[in-house]
Image 1 (tube, rainbow, N blue to C red):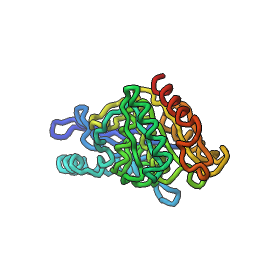
Image 2 (image 1 turned 60 degrees about the horizontal axis):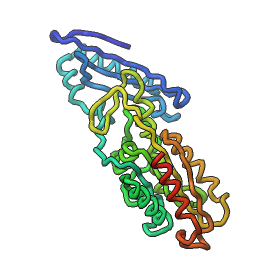
Image 3 (image 1 turned 120 degrees about the vertical axis):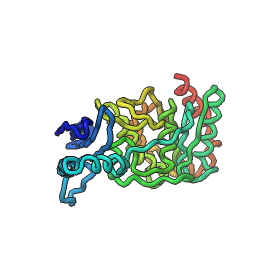
Image 4 (image 1 turned 180 degrees about the horizontal axis):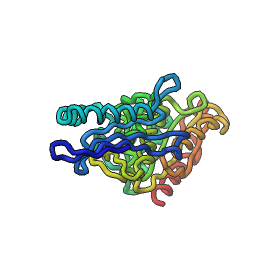
Length: 307
């Protein structure tokens, strides 16, 4: 839907576009309503079909079309006042925000154990030592020491490519985006990953959304610097490694954890490049006592980082 008009010798365009995102999710559509003049967007509203739960009595299509009519009526009745109102009213721009600048490291380690001195911490130390001995910079992230709001499945990240929550998850996503290698070190908790890592995995949905909608022609999203670009695709390949420990004996203890990590890497477009799994830690206690395990982890890390 489009309406071009002139008010006070200034030409405006009110446009409502629908973008087909069904390649990502069935029946997902993004609606973008913009008021622009001379190529500059003065006001904007975005919504998508997945924002609306089954019990909500209206849809994204109805909301977008209704707002189009409301904006058009306001502009026709009080053009100067209403256009000024739309320009100043932040409700239609609130989901587009600058992401903080993050440091750029060659590799990022997500240490998923709440224990700062446990077996996963020992593995993280081996990995960091290996990377730095190869001349690569490294950053270790401890999700349990950070303020990260759980994902609530609102799907608003598919409007602008960033999460509705502004917290320390921005730092994690920014660090991973700027790296070339992501290492996940995690214990097995109740047959899967601990809560800290699961929160990170769920919140990486906004990273997935950013990469997906960035390639849509004519649709702008916000870069970490705050600059809007039409294309913001991941520019380089990021490789991923998994190092995990389980208390009980038997590799079957990782059967539920592995699909979670594999799905996480696939969703974030990170190439799964290998893993090392260490079981029976309840009996062994200290992972450094496992024969050849340290060398195995260091060799895989070095090989992946240098490939």
